Image (cartoon, rainbow, N blue to C red; front, side):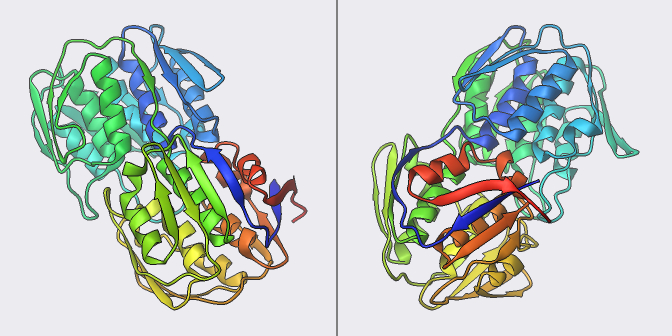
Amino acid sequence: MDRFVIEGGKILKGSVTASGAKNSVLPILAASIMAKGASVIHSVPDLQDVRTMLKILQYLGAKVSFKNGTVEVDPQAVNKNDAPYEFVKTMRASISLLGPMLARSGKAKFSLPGGCIIGPRPIDLHIKGLQKLGVDIKIEDGYVIAETKGKLKGDYIFLGGAFGSSVLATANVMCAAAVAKGTTVIEFAACEPEISDLANFLVKMGARIEGIGSPCLVIKGVKSLRGAEHRVIPDRIETGTFLLAGAITRGCVAVEKCQPIHLGAFLEKMSETGIEICAGKDFIEIKGKNEWKSTDVVTLAYPGFPTDLQAQMMAFLSLADGVSIITEKVFPERFIHVGELNRLGASISLDGSKAIVKGVKNLFGARVMASDLRASAALVLAGLAAEGTTHISRIYHLFRGYHKFEEKLMSLGAEIKREKDTI
């Protein structure tokens, strides 16, 4: 395995371009198998999760090409309806194939998905929603086995759960409902921009969806879908991560070709710390300061503060003046990065689903270990700000979600290199 070696204390300056959204492109690629013709998807980031999804599509029988950020998927030869464990064990978003597979063939045998260890993420809402559309589902030996009872039929579906709405459950039900007979109403649908992006792709394929971007989706089923051409929205989590990299190093960093409207809650919290922000239609620039104030953060479903920026924000607030309280309401156990940040000199304690972050004057380089995708990014940010050298092991998590991460950081002035881990 590789590790990052970061020489901290470098002030980051310059601009980077936002990549396509990881959490958008994966369900879109899954949905492409529903079409009767080929689809062309632009702004696809070259990530490990994307490569995994393309392998699954090829296993199913689809013809796939990926070149210069553009993926073409021709699903005409798809002849399988199963997704084995070896393909999906590392990627939670593989579950987004369940709805499209049922829409295409009426059958699906799907290994329960893997991904980052950030707390329980059951698929009960996926099952609940698909059952309402007429799908028989059972779980045996770690597999979801699903089959339609005749043709999919539209229905009223309340998709709320113990922790709110579910992005991937909304994606699955929306895809299946697109070709179901009659009308489907999804109440308490996820409102994330990535769901709207998927819905817009489905509309280009011929789906009839109303209420896009709202918690109530009305889907009037059509007989079939066609291939479509689509450009994926910019990645708001990557955008926020690079802005925090600029802020935590007291630098000045701009992210271009992004969508500031998707980061309202994040930008509001950054403003509360005293960081200067300049945003236009498709760019955000952040100007760091020598000191910044503490603030309290509560992660919520969109348009609230995104859970996928919680760890990175924690790294930033570990150097704030004062005490910050971070409450995690999406994944209450998503604090595995706390111990590693403390190894770098942070002062963070846990109280259930809350993290109490007492700002310190300095962080110091140390050997740390990444545990999941966003925790890995948080450790990189902390390492960039720390005095001395930071070694981060198990950085493979980063390559699941950040396109050319180290290259972009180096273009801003970071001193970071990758080497073989000796541990």
